[in-house]
Length: 209
Image (cartoon, rainbow, N blue to C red):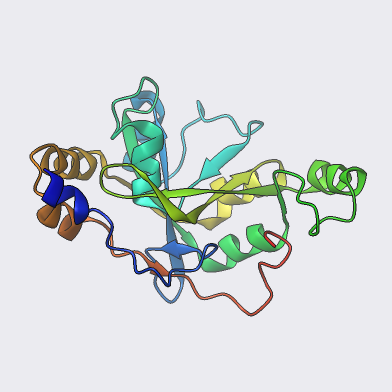
């Protein structure tokens, strides 16, 4: 297992600390969420969230498949048994980033705490940068984007940005099984082909130092 664990870190040492990595096309980007079956299954079947999905609550979307696996325990945690890959428009994703506020105060990025609090209260989206995970769900040195949507952003997400919703729970279980068997090479080959998401220079400067 020690040999397999050494191969669980495929990221080069030159990987920047802050960078969005995602499965994306010229027009869409895929994010991940996990829900109980009563929400996740009809969402995948109908291509939109059912009435049980609460629009008045903040919803967090995650481009990283492995960070989602860390969060939902490979789809085994209660209330997170159905893992969804949600393909949304790049226009919507980039609108959310442009209108987002960092979820915590950062000295040197924000003028002062009071200004940050006002921005956070008004912002329809917020960003957290959490340690990315490897196949063993161990933290990596670089960060993974978590994007929280509320108010206008949550409505736009549900009603306008979604292109396709896919139930990827079977994929999560298959990758997890390969990991448990120590076959990390096969597990890695099954992962979504996430790559750096193109952003204009300075477009994320309000979201990290």
